[in-house]
Length: 331
Image (cartoon, rainbow, N blue to C red; front, top):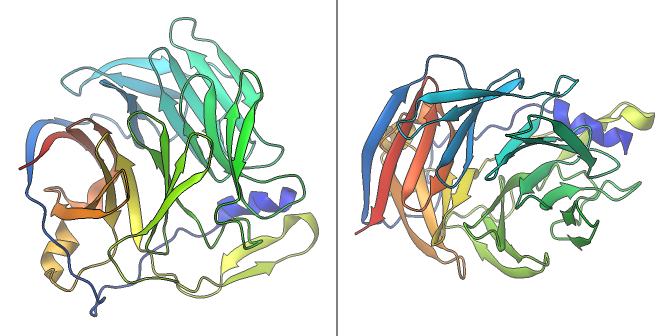
């Protein structure tokens, strides 16, 4: 398993230039996107996360998070009282009374009670994991590895009683999940999980028992991006690299109680180059079956987007130096 730690020194994925026809068109959704609030951030932050209307920002050093008020301004600072420096990659989550930190390389979950301001940690996997999602105070989903294996597995873990469900979805290749890397998210009720690979036009929906409910295609034409992986080194510290350029299809994803939203990295044939270059294009899919609902542009600077958070019809967009709240509604 030590060899899997090399996953986190991989070069960042990047899309191929959209300088040719990609073989698909978008249907433009009648979506009302209206900016409600905007706040120029006074400090450098990394990610936006939350629980309901409670919003938080993480900062690059991962020593504290900032709690926001209803006007998107920093209400107070929550110091992460743990006797170590978190090493990236890490993910942050929240619920009504806790902040959760998932440290991928250590295979651990750290949780801090906002009232007690004390951390406790739980070992989720023997080795590192590559994706994670906090569903509740007791339930966590990771994409990790069984002992001695380089084939990734989805696992839902109850950290209170140790109960586990697993899925071998997209586990065919023994490349530590390199070729099937993607985005893990859930619906608002947390009873449906969605995995959207970066490099293919796929949507995989699982239920709370980690059973595949459906597989659907996104609207583009990338069926197989031909990811080629090569290893360097020997023994326990072999490093994996992409040995050929990769076409990044899907960039970010999130869901509310009605739709799955996917920011695409491919320009449709009926899009202008200027519009695609300037604004994020969001493809939407119905949650119940993954069917395509339509697409819309988000009126934000595509180059500055860091992360999204959606709560019902409120869409929060974290940009470099700015946080914006949009109201989104189907017409």
